[in-house]
Image 1 (cartoon, rainbow, N blue to C red):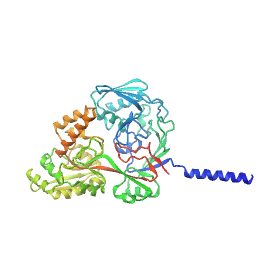
Image 2: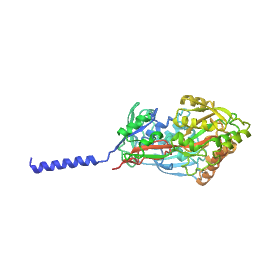
Image 3: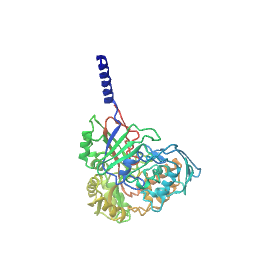
Image 4: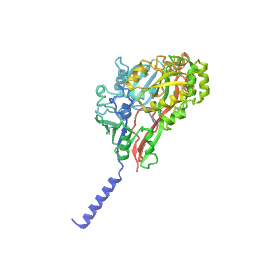
Length: 492
C-alpha cells in the first residue's frame, strides 16, 4: 500500500469518525414517576398509561394537539350533518398496525362497539354514550351517528380512551400493545422501563426519534441524580421543590406550563354545616390562594376561581369573587350561626400538593375559628371513603380530566352539589355545537359554581418539565395526558 493510499484512507476514516461524532442522536430516555399498570389506554384509567402510549403507539380518528385543539388523525377529514348528529369520517389509506395488518373502517367500528359494550371496562365509557351507531360505508369511510348533539364529541374521540385498536390484537394490548402510531412497542422490563422504536412503515410523517425509553423513577432524589448523570434525557413533570437544581444550569431547560388539573378544597355540600352557602362563602374568604400556591407548589401553578383551566380560551377569571378577607369570613360564620366557628376533618390523599395545602389551609381556617383535623389516607382508602362512600367533610384533590365542569351537574357526585339551573345549562351545553354559544354557556356555568362556593378553588396544577438543553419539541402544557414524541428532536 502506497503512502498516498494510506493517507487517503486515514483521512477518510477521520472524516467518518468526525461525522459520526457530529451526528445528532436519535434516541431519548425519559424519566416518569409512575409505572403504568397496563399499556391499553382503552381499558384503564391510570394517567401513566397515556404518558407512554398516547399518540406514540396508539392513535385515534383525531388527535389533540399541544394547544388542546382537535387535528386530523387516522381520519384525514370529516363532515358533519346540519343537525349535528352524523359524522362521516374519511380514513387515511395505506395505514397498517404494528403487526402488519391493515387498518380500515372495520377497526373503527370494532373499537367503538367495544367501548360501548355492556361488559366494557373503558374508564370513560360515559363520554361515548351519545353514539347511537357506527356504520362501515366502505373500507375507508365510516359514519358515526349520535343520539343527540355533543359539542365535545370530536375532542372526546381524540382522547386516549378512544384510540383505534384491532380485533386481532385488542385482547393483548395490556401487555403487548399494537397500534398504528409512529412508535411500536418493543419491551416492558417490569419495574424498570418501557422501550418503543420508530415504526418503519408508519403512514404519516416520520418522527426524528428512532427509539424512546420510559424509565420509571418514583423518587425525586433518584430522578435528580439520573438527570444530572445523563442516565435520562428529561422528565415531563418534575418535583417543583427540586427545580432550583436545574434552573440556570445551561445543560438543562425547565419548561413550566399547566396541566388540566384543577386543585380544589372539595366540600361535602350534602352535609352540615357545608350545606349552608354562608359557611361556604366564609371558607372561600378565609383562603389565601397566593400563600397556598407558594407553600404547596413552590410558586408554580395558577390561581383559579372556578373549576376550569385558565389556559382554556373560555376561562373566566373569577378569583376575585371571594377575595381573602378574614374579618368578612368571621362575619359570615356568625351570620350562619357559627360565631365561634366549628370543627371539621380534612381527609388528604398521599400527594405532596394535597398534604402541603392541607397544612396551610388548616392554619388559614384557624384564623376565622374553623378547626380542622388533618387525616392522611392512602389512595385506596381515600377512594373508598371520599369518592365512593362520600364519608368526608373536606378534602383536597386535583381533577385532571379536561373540560370536566359537567361533574357539577351530577348531584350524586362525591361533593353532592344539586343545582337544577346548573344542570339545565349543562344539558344545553352538551347539545350545543356553536362555539360562541358554548363559550357563553360555559362561562355562565363557571360563574354559578364560583358564586355558590361549591368548593374552594385553589390553583391549576403546574407541569414542570426538566429536559436536556439540546432537546426541542416537548409540550410545555398538558391539554391531555401523554408525553407525545412526534415533535421531539435533538439540536446541536
